[in-house]
Length: 63
Image (cartoon, rainbow, N blue to C red; front, side, top):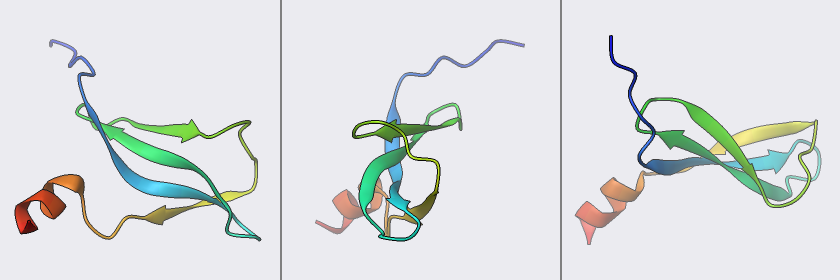
C-alpha cells in the first residue's frame, strides 16, 4: 500500500485558550487526513478548537 504524501493543507479551525478565548493558532487538515497544530508562538497546554464556519473551497464557490 502506497503512503499518501502531504501536498496541501487547509485551515479547519482556530486554536483558542480555554479561559480567555485568545486566538493562539490554527488547526490544519492535510490532504492525507492528518491534522496539525500551527501555533503563533509557544504552544499552550489548556486550549480548545473553534471550528471555522465554512471551508475555503465553500467560500470560493459562493463568490
